[in-house]
Image (cartoon, rainbow, N blue to C red):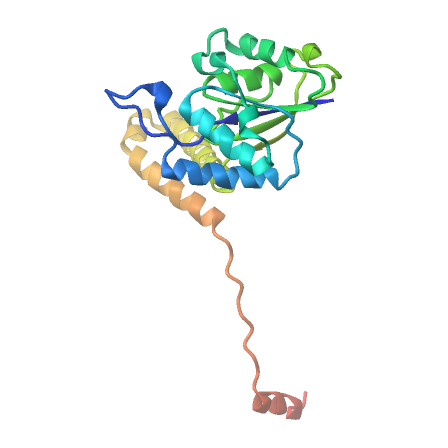
Length: 239
Protein backbone atom coordinates (compact mmCIF):
# COMPACT_ATOMS: atom_id res chain seq x y z
CA UNK A 1 0.00 0.00 0.00
CA UNK A 2 1.11 3.58 -0.72
CA UNK A 3 0.04 6.70 1.17
CA UNK A 4 -0.10 10.24 -0.16
CA UNK A 5 -0.78 13.48 1.75
CA UNK A 6 -1.77 16.68 -0.06
CA UNK A 7 -1.11 19.83 1.96
CA UNK A 8 -2.08 23.34 0.95
CA UNK A 9 0.22 26.09 2.22
CA UNK A 10 -0.87 28.20 5.19
CA UNK A 11 -2.02 31.84 5.16
CA UNK A 12 0.38 34.10 3.24
CA UNK A 13 0.87 37.85 2.89
CA UNK A 14 -1.52 39.37 0.31
CA UNK A 15 -0.34 39.98 -3.23
CA UNK A 16 0.31 43.69 -3.76
CA UNK A 17 1.05 45.65 -6.90
CA UNK A 18 4.83 45.72 -6.44
CA UNK A 19 5.22 42.29 -4.80
CA UNK A 20 6.16 39.05 -6.51
CA UNK A 21 3.71 36.20 -5.94
CA UNK A 22 6.52 33.64 -5.77
CA UNK A 23 8.25 35.37 -2.85
CA UNK A 24 5.17 35.92 -0.68
CA UNK A 25 5.80 34.63 2.84
CA UNK A 26 3.55 33.23 5.53
CA UNK A 27 1.95 35.74 7.85
CA UNK A 28 2.42 35.46 11.61
CA UNK A 29 -1.05 33.94 11.80
CA UNK A 30 -0.17 31.59 8.95
CA UNK A 31 2.91 30.32 10.77
CA UNK A 32 0.99 29.76 13.99
CA UNK A 33 -1.80 27.93 12.14
CA UNK A 34 0.69 25.76 10.26
CA UNK A 35 2.48 24.82 13.49
CA UNK A 36 -0.82 23.89 15.14
CA UNK A 37 -1.96 21.77 12.20
CA UNK A 38 1.47 20.17 11.78
CA UNK A 39 1.57 19.09 15.42
CA UNK A 40 -2.01 17.87 15.20
CA UNK A 41 -1.02 15.86 12.13
CA UNK A 42 2.16 14.53 13.76
CA UNK A 43 0.14 13.43 16.81
CA UNK A 44 -1.62 10.85 14.61
CA UNK A 45 1.79 9.18 14.25
CA UNK A 46 1.90 9.20 10.44
CA UNK A 47 4.77 7.81 8.41
CA UNK A 48 6.03 10.40 5.92
CA UNK A 49 9.02 9.11 4.00
CA UNK A 50 9.25 11.97 1.51
CA UNK A 51 8.18 15.63 1.43
CA UNK A 52 7.87 17.35 -1.95
CA UNK A 53 7.10 21.07 -2.07
CA UNK A 54 6.45 23.90 -4.44
CA UNK A 55 9.53 26.16 -4.38
CA UNK A 56 7.37 29.25 -3.69
CA UNK A 57 8.19 30.75 -0.28
CA UNK A 58 4.77 30.24 1.32
CA UNK A 59 4.68 26.56 0.37
CA UNK A 60 8.28 25.84 1.34
CA UNK A 61 7.82 27.56 4.72
CA UNK A 62 4.78 25.37 5.33
CA UNK A 63 6.68 22.25 4.27
CA UNK A 64 9.51 23.09 6.68
CA UNK A 65 7.06 23.53 9.56
CA UNK A 66 5.56 20.10 8.86
CA UNK A 67 9.04 18.62 8.49
CA UNK A 68 10.06 19.91 11.91
CA UNK A 69 6.92 18.53 13.56
CA UNK A 70 7.56 15.15 11.94
CA UNK A 71 11.26 15.00 12.71
CA UNK A 72 12.02 15.08 8.98
CA UNK A 73 15.25 16.74 7.85
CA UNK A 74 14.14 19.84 5.94
CA UNK A 75 17.24 19.68 3.77
CA UNK A 76 15.70 16.53 2.28
CA UNK A 77 12.60 18.37 1.06
CA UNK A 78 12.40 18.01 -2.72
CA UNK A 79 11.30 21.02 -4.80
CA UNK A 80 9.10 20.60 -7.85
CA UNK A 81 8.44 23.71 -9.96
CA UNK A 82 5.31 22.36 -11.67
CA UNK A 83 3.46 22.44 -8.33
CA UNK A 84 3.76 26.23 -8.38
CA UNK A 85 3.49 26.75 -12.12
CA UNK A 86 0.44 24.42 -12.26
CA UNK A 87 1.22 23.52 -15.86
CA UNK A 88 -0.19 20.21 -17.03
CA UNK A 89 -2.82 20.06 -14.29
CA UNK A 90 -3.47 16.82 -12.45
CA UNK A 91 -1.51 14.78 -14.99
CA UNK A 92 1.69 16.66 -14.09
CA UNK A 93 1.29 15.71 -10.43
CA UNK A 94 0.50 12.13 -11.38
CA UNK A 95 3.83 11.99 -13.26
CA UNK A 96 5.52 13.31 -10.12
CA UNK A 97 3.87 10.58 -8.01
CA UNK A 98 4.85 7.90 -10.55
CA UNK A 99 8.49 8.99 -10.24
CA UNK A 100 8.65 8.46 -6.45
CA UNK A 101 11.06 5.72 -5.48
CA UNK A 102 9.23 2.58 -4.38
CA UNK A 103 11.32 2.36 -1.24
CA UNK A 104 9.15 5.21 0.03
CA UNK A 105 5.88 3.99 1.43
CA UNK A 106 4.41 7.46 1.91
CA UNK A 107 4.86 10.95 0.55
CA UNK A 108 3.60 14.48 1.17
CA UNK A 109 3.05 17.12 -1.52
CA UNK A 110 2.84 20.75 -0.32
CA UNK A 111 1.41 23.18 -2.83
CA UNK A 112 -1.30 25.52 -4.03
CA UNK A 113 -4.87 25.84 -5.22
CA UNK A 114 -6.53 25.14 -7.54
CA UNK A 115 -4.10 22.38 -8.56
CA UNK A 116 -4.29 20.42 -5.30
CA UNK A 117 -8.09 20.18 -5.22
CA UNK A 118 -8.07 19.31 -8.94
CA UNK A 119 -5.59 16.52 -8.24
CA UNK A 120 -7.56 15.32 -5.21
CA UNK A 121 -10.70 14.98 -7.35
CA UNK A 122 -8.60 13.28 -10.02
CA UNK A 123 -7.50 10.69 -7.46
CA UNK A 124 -11.03 10.27 -6.07
CA UNK A 125 -13.93 11.51 -8.17
CA UNK A 126 -16.29 11.78 -5.20
CA UNK A 127 -13.90 14.16 -3.44
CA UNK A 128 -15.17 17.55 -4.59
CA UNK A 129 -13.88 19.82 -1.84
CA UNK A 130 -11.71 22.88 -2.41
CA UNK A 131 -8.73 22.72 -0.09
CA UNK A 132 -8.72 25.56 2.48
CA UNK A 133 -5.39 27.06 3.52
CA UNK A 134 -3.36 24.69 5.67
CA UNK A 135 -5.55 21.67 4.96
CA UNK A 136 -4.38 18.05 4.69
CA UNK A 137 -5.97 15.29 2.61
CA UNK A 138 -4.86 11.72 3.32
CA UNK A 139 -5.08 9.19 0.46
CA UNK A 140 -4.32 5.48 0.58
CA UNK A 141 -3.73 3.37 -2.54
CA UNK A 142 -3.88 -0.38 -2.82
CA UNK A 143 -0.70 -0.45 -4.93
CA UNK A 144 2.74 -1.82 -4.28
CA UNK A 145 4.45 0.63 -6.63
CA UNK A 146 3.88 4.36 -7.19
CA UNK A 147 3.79 4.03 -10.98
CA UNK A 148 0.64 1.91 -10.76
CA UNK A 149 -1.39 4.66 -9.08
CA UNK A 150 -4.08 5.86 -11.48
CA UNK A 151 -7.10 8.12 -11.79
CA UNK A 152 -9.91 7.47 -9.32
CA UNK A 153 -8.05 4.79 -7.36
CA UNK A 154 -7.37 6.76 -4.19
CA UNK A 155 -9.20 6.15 -0.92
CA UNK A 156 -9.72 9.28 1.19
CA UNK A 157 -8.86 8.42 4.79
CA UNK A 158 -9.15 11.91 6.24
CA UNK A 159 -9.54 15.57 5.34
CA UNK A 160 -8.47 18.02 8.03
CA UNK A 161 -8.26 21.82 8.12
CA UNK A 162 -8.22 24.61 10.74
CA UNK A 163 -11.46 25.22 12.67
CA UNK A 164 -13.06 22.28 10.87
CA UNK A 165 -15.93 21.84 13.33
CA UNK A 166 -16.92 25.52 13.13
CA UNK A 167 -16.62 25.59 9.34
CA UNK A 168 -18.75 22.46 8.91
CA UNK A 169 -21.36 23.81 11.32
CA UNK A 170 -21.58 27.06 9.36
CA UNK A 171 -21.92 25.13 6.09
CA UNK A 172 -24.77 23.15 7.62
CA UNK A 173 -26.51 26.32 8.83
CA UNK A 174 -26.13 28.03 5.46
CA UNK A 175 -27.42 24.97 3.62
CA UNK A 176 -30.39 24.60 5.97
CA UNK A 177 -31.31 28.28 5.64
CA UNK A 178 -31.08 28.12 1.87
CA UNK A 179 -33.20 24.96 1.67
CA UNK A 180 -35.96 26.35 3.89
CA UNK A 181 -35.98 29.78 2.18
CA UNK A 182 -36.15 28.18 -1.27
CA UNK A 183 -39.14 26.08 -0.18
CA UNK A 184 -40.97 29.12 1.17
CA UNK A 185 -40.23 31.16 -1.97
CA UNK A 186 -41.54 28.35 -4.15
CA UNK A 187 -44.80 28.15 -2.21
CA UNK A 188 -45.29 31.93 -2.14
CA UNK A 189 -44.53 32.31 -5.83
CA UNK A 190 -47.04 29.59 -6.68
CA UNK A 191 -49.72 31.36 -4.64
CA UNK A 192 -48.98 35.02 -5.51
CA UNK A 193 -45.85 35.78 -7.63
CA UNK A 194 -46.15 39.55 -7.24
CA UNK A 195 -46.39 39.49 -3.45
CA UNK A 196 -43.58 36.94 -3.13
CA UNK A 197 -40.93 39.47 -4.08
CA UNK A 198 -42.14 42.03 -1.57
CA UNK A 199 -41.69 39.73 1.40
CA UNK A 200 -38.22 38.46 0.46
CA UNK A 201 -36.49 40.34 3.28
CA UNK A 202 -39.03 39.10 5.80
CA UNK A 203 -38.54 35.52 4.59
CA UNK A 204 -34.77 35.78 5.08
CA UNK A 205 -35.09 37.17 8.61
CA UNK A 206 -37.73 34.61 9.59
CA UNK A 207 -35.69 31.70 8.26
CA UNK A 208 -32.60 32.82 10.19
CA UNK A 209 -34.65 33.03 13.40
CA UNK A 210 -36.19 29.63 12.75
CA UNK A 211 -32.82 27.93 12.15
CA UNK A 212 -31.31 29.66 15.18
CA UNK A 213 -34.17 28.39 17.36
CA UNK A 214 -33.84 24.91 15.88
CA UNK A 215 -30.12 24.73 16.67
CA UNK A 216 -30.40 26.22 20.14
CA UNK A 217 -29.62 23.68 22.82
CA UNK A 218 -32.49 23.11 25.26
CA UNK A 219 -31.85 24.43 28.74
CA UNK A 220 -32.22 21.76 31.38
CA UNK A 221 -34.45 22.73 34.26
CA UNK A 222 -32.67 22.53 37.56
CA UNK A 223 -34.48 20.57 40.25
CA UNK A 224 -34.98 22.55 43.41
CA UNK A 225 -33.25 21.03 46.39
CA UNK A 226 -35.63 20.45 49.23
CA UNK A 227 -34.55 21.66 52.63
CA UNK A 228 -34.56 19.49 55.73
CA UNK A 229 -37.79 21.13 56.96
CA UNK A 230 -39.53 20.46 53.66
CA UNK A 231 -38.50 16.82 53.81
CA UNK A 232 -39.84 16.58 57.34
CA UNK A 233 -43.16 18.09 56.37
CA UNK A 234 -43.43 15.75 53.43
CA UNK A 235 -42.94 12.75 55.70
CA UNK A 236 -45.51 14.03 58.18
CA UNK A 237 -48.27 14.38 55.64
CA UNK A 238 -50.89 11.66 55.50
CA UNK A 239 -52.30 10.53 52.24
